[in-house]
Amino acid sequence: MNQSFISDILYADIESKAKELTVNSNNTVQPVALMRLGVFVPKPSKSKGESKEIDATKAFSQLEIAKAEGYDDVKITGPRLDMDTDFKTWIGVIYAFSKYGLSSNTIQLSFQEFAKACGFPSKRLDAKLRLTIHESLGRLRNKGIAFKRGKDAKGGYQTGLLKVGRFDADLDLIELEADSKLWELFQLDYRVLLQHHALRALPKKEAAQAIYTFIESLPQNPLPLSFARIRERLALQSAVGEQNRIIKKAIEQLKTIGYLDCSIEKKGRESFVIVHSRNPKLKLPE
Image (cartoon, rainbow, N blue to C red; front, side, top):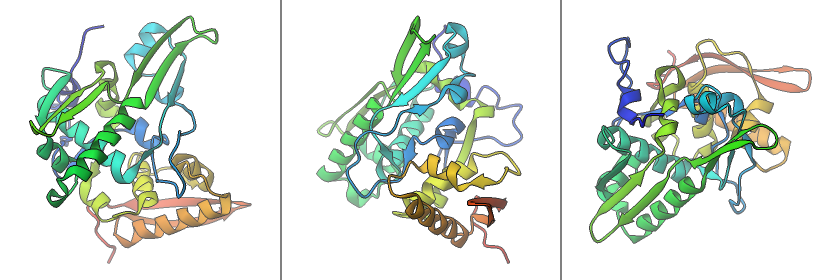
């Protein structure tokens, strides 16, 4: 399989697109699969620990590596990735590769530019932030993606969201390396444009942020969303009743910032979110 770069994916179909998807200070492009699976989730009240193993077989089955090698089992494992720090760092990673990874899957940029791309305020460029980013890059590096062929593992491939992440504070330098086999996730049919200002409008509201990324990745006129599906996406660790309370509060927060127009209906013992409209530009209904 020939090596590819993120530019091959992000810009390959630029002439055929009605609206270009861009990565900049206002937008981030993210794989639909990662936004629908419980990869980036709210921080639990107790210690982070490991996330539950995620079955990503259906979501990753369209990748060339899965088809070419006959991999029929894909699992995502590793540390729990939160919205407030790890998703911000991941946004910075995607920004960095979209800008500097035009012909290489190993890139360098200044720590200051990277921190800004993550959305961390400039006044936080200190030793504490360096440690925060260092630890977050480690969690991204350790978030493994395992491809397997057959129940008895006749073949396999182990990779992760990030292959290498290192930085040198004295040189003000960040170096990142990615696995080119995963860039397919950013193909036009498999990616979603997320607005930074929607995330910024929800500071510290990680459940609402996660639900925003989930709902925004859904197709037009999505089917009713069961609370069970949202609980699965959020991967919360509290009792079901408390999880439902968190979901309802997050939905109200999404309505308050002008992103979501929806209603909640109960069918039997299950509640469903009925999405009427989404407003990524956060326009409150008149």
